[in-house]
Image (cartoon, rainbow, N blue to C red; front, side, top):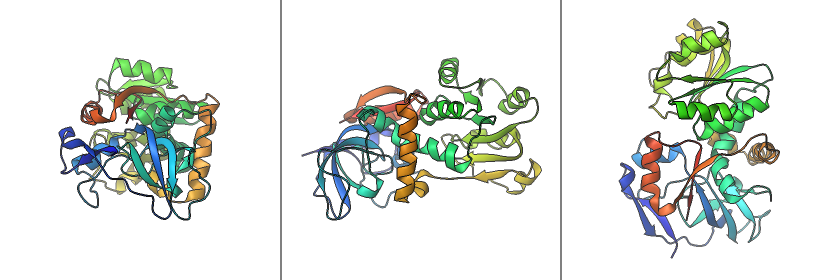
Length: 324
């Protein structure tokens, strides 16, 4: 019987158990995949801890993975057993085998291996909608990316640089600063030691940035707004330090007629045609070498509790991939 990580009650990393599960045959519109690599993301912690609620307990965490199609449900076209596939908005991917809705699956090109795919679907597609759809980064833009050495950060800073932007990144340590520089950051700010808004003003000669991408949340708000030029974009896409709860919309007027948005990947990829377009864009920049996907940690699926503890403790950089 295949194994999976199961969460029977919300809590810390220790609530994740490695257990036998029945997977079953794919239903209409589903594909059964034998996974070779499982992606790990901060959102998995939100679900495990109960910060985000699931429809019912127990559940298997995970949204991202890559592997081989083993069976097709009724009405599925465009795939066949043996195809290599990947997905970033599935559910229950902390498992050896998983049932996935065909509409959220994309076929992998030969030039992209399974570890890379599992590391980049959620983070890479997130980067795609941030840089190409939420605010379209143009040559000459100056952007600020918080947590520039994180999983999304290291992909986004390379991609933004490739698009011709000047990239400012914030990081928490000297090691992470070096990593951020290697991945496209023109300027790196150690947010624990420096007032990042003041540094951004200095770097931009008082002008501010066109856009701030913020997956950190509470710890960087409202100072992120002080980094923007008039009519700039504040894009909050995560809350690694806690959610931004007290949001007074009149602040946007005071700080220069700013735009603020809180997009999610799931809204974008709900449209199959959009998902295919986004994935093609991501595959193109990865295969051309413009964006390298940094997999810094590999672990066994059974060691998911340690993986979560390290991620929550800010001990990781780049992407983490688990192997069933």
